[in-house]
Length: 232
Length: 107
Image (cartoon, rainbow over all chains, first blue to last red; front, side, top):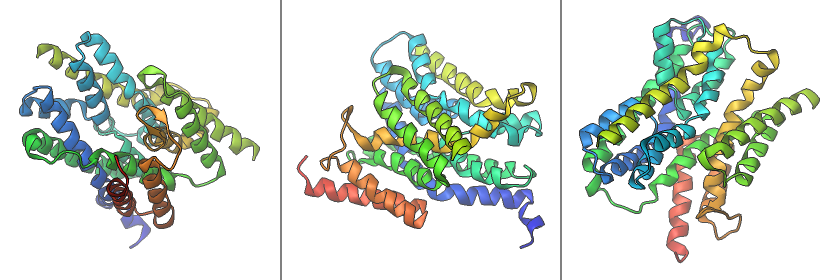
């Protein structure tokens, strides 16, 4: 296929879908678990689905649900759950250059659809283009694929919750999914150093609340990578 | 229940604003070249900060011993990922090793 054809929106979109498809295998258990967790706090399944669409974030949802059972003030719960999502600031900054020329509507849509998985899958593709061109369609493909499977999985968890077998360690599929994305992300030595430092720091700072240790780990990892790049 | 709705709505709006933040600000704020060059380390830094505690900790404490089934499953899956670069294989091999260890090892 000629280079021009593969740059067409529809091919970029399909490429995005194709890229995220294997990742979705690990997302389904996560969605199921999240849906089940919602029902355990006595939220109606249909309300849960609305909430899932509003937020589109499993980790924030799970954190919020855990804190809701602990009976804390609403504002504290809100801030704690949002803190977990601060990493999206970094995704936002990372993809901003590639969507800068797009319309407001595109930016809002792609922003809403931003997830760990879609980001991890599309960022390299966005970077490899000589110019952003139509590559935002790849991000749309991966983002929509992720969104759909996520909502369906949460829906299944919400409406089928009680009848699903417990104790299958399904939640382990989530870190495995990220591992599957993390290893190929290391493409050179500076990046390997960034990964190493990030992993080490997050362990050292594990006790810090609000996931701030994770933010510190990410920042230090990025700084390490930059330093290595300039001096190696 | 209204309390829960407020929290969820706030989470929805807040999360979207976080996601949208730099996308909205990009053209309007000039970032130094150094920042732009650093962006490429974000995926690796983020992913490893997300996964490391999942594999190296048990019950909130670091566990780098062989008694940590997640560590072993993670190493196995990591090797599969390194060799095959195949996401589905990585996930399934990791789950398989975990299930195996859970059957063999006492709880």
